[in-house]
Length: 340
Length: 299
Image (cartoon, rainbow over all chains, first blue to last red; front, side):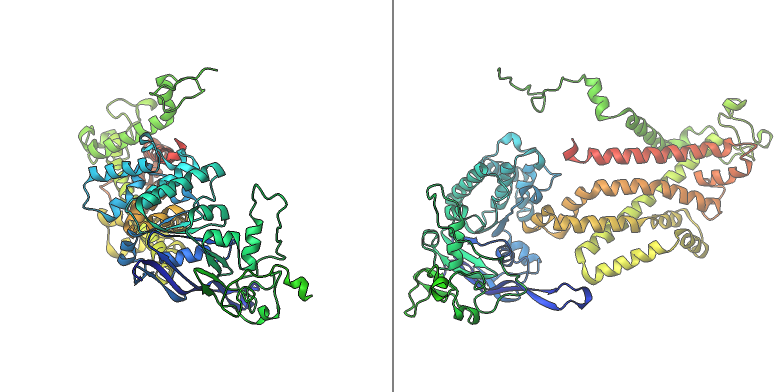
């Protein structure tokens, strides 16, 4: 399919680690991302949700070629993404950009913001005449709602929302086709979050970039994403349209995740409290990685790893949600009680 | 409540009372800093143009005027700072010494900063084996007393002003290299350098345009610490007879040779010693001030 901009196939990133115990510690493998498949069409926004440590950010790094995958591959517009940070990698930055969680950290505190917004032109368009660079930087500032008189300000003089606008303007300077947003609003307070998200939606309507939108905040993902992928312990557990995933979650983990999101209307909500902590990614449980915390786990879940089954735009990796006929149905909530 | 519009001439509306212009000026340029700037400029002027204003040739001897006192100690204006054991004018010798010593110290500090920053950045950029090698060289340099190396080099290769300057340029580079490496590694992990790299910037751009200006303040302070040490090292080597060779003179050589007369004619070594102290102090003060000046978050 030609309109697939980005595709990840069996993408995995493992880190060799040493278990505690100093020199005597046993070497082990931390599976940050373990076999992830997804496609991203041109102009599509794919939301990536999951709790911290589930491999969201590692996935972003793999997509951008910051770290080489241990296995599997990422293809951008049909070609593998280089990971060596040489000229090819640098040239590709014209087409894929990133927005960071901490805008103050992502900006050089010694340069006025207009210089930083115009920096992509300095890097990628050395032939562009200086006045044109200045003009385009000014236009970018206006497009993200920064006042012209703020051009000479330094990052520390701006508010958090304004800084994130600077980062967004810089990322969009060269009209990238793909934007990877790693928790772009989680460092901002709620009212500013809304502003920045609205700005991003507007810019998306105008420029039509595709985005990998990473967040642990379901509301934010729901507002921004065309499609949602839920990750748990380095694997995709569920995928689908935001409304489907958030209204009729199939996977028990997603059910718990959705039930934990506060809503203003449902007062007596049926919150599913998961027992225990997310397991250590060094020591992933056998079978379904979620089974020790799953309220509905059955014997099969302990021994057999569920594969991600796709059906009509949805996908889920859960034995209980996959019926024999291939149809997907929500996993029953309290099977455990029945079994016990 | 009334809404006041901020005065456009001021950066922001402020509850503080407006300062007078003179006070604002002295707040930005404290009096000590102005004095330091003045002294450094004076020294640079002496280094550049001193030979034009020197009252006498610094090598000219006048044996009938040996060890004559300076003005404050009973001497005459013919020799404002007195004469030395060979009847040479201390003022003229001081000017010649400042020229030599400051030139050597500035150039040597520049050389050591260049080597240090280059190797430090290289280590931070390459990591792995290359970094280990560079660190080993740094440790080797730090473990060897520099004076011994300098003695060996000067003894084997002979002495010339150029060689001497380059040799002193190898003094202190390992400290600057360590600082540059540490700061560059920290900066790489900090967002801003990583973010610029993600924009597709080349390593030379990242290091030259982003990391270097950001860590320049620390390097500058380290260089201002290096500068007095180079002057003192030069003095030590000159005193041992391995530095600047007579008839050329330097601040260290003047102190060294004047030491014999410290009780009978202290002015021979007091004048160059005072110049060393004041100059190094001014350089340190200026370095600290520049560090703050370059930091936009402290403005």
